[in-house]
Image 1: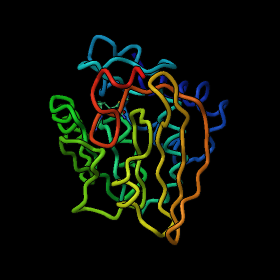
Image 2: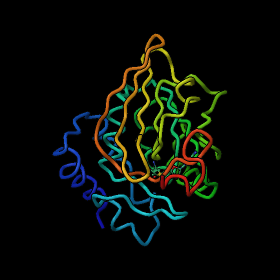
Image 3: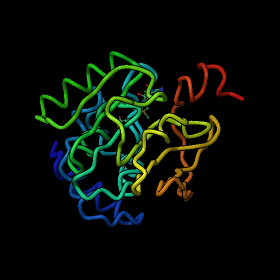
Image 4: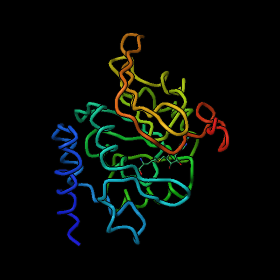
Length: 220
Ligand code: SAM
């Protein structure tokens, strides 16, 4: 299969027509080999217009969702980013292409280990991954210029707001109930928070101290 061609097709049919216009984001989506981040038997579907299962009950997000979340972060290249929910590591790679450093936290150890291996085999040296509850953030490394939450949450965890830079820091997160969320963009400047809502979406739950409390609770 010509995966490079599939990536170009994905950009032309799924991203540009839906309004993704940041050329740096489009180039990163053209470059990162998404098929290497999914289980081998579904590699031929890696560039389809959908989220796919990556095992452990988790998913790699739909390409458009990865692109819009990345575009909303307004990356110029010198940012320090915190990502919550490493999953397959695909979104991490996209961020690593576009920013200075990416710190990523994954709750499920097997996924974190798998993502570390793929990212190091692709020679990403600006990515740091740890296993743990991302709703607590990564205090020793804060403040962050950007924070991306890639799992659905009832609210933006307070520690993450505290660990965001006060100098036009941006958080992007799917916020809502278990079955539907909207992408929320929060901009922090001089102690004030400005909020914008963007596209509706459905993500697996963010489970942790400042997210959903345990697997069952998100059915409320
Ligand atoms: N961005 C990922 C990718 O490109 O493959 C997809 C992320 S997946 C939709 C959401 C991830 O968030 C899952 O891997 C899940 O285990 C993780 N997660 C859920 N709660 C978490 C928490 N409190 N801290 C860190 N990771 C968490």
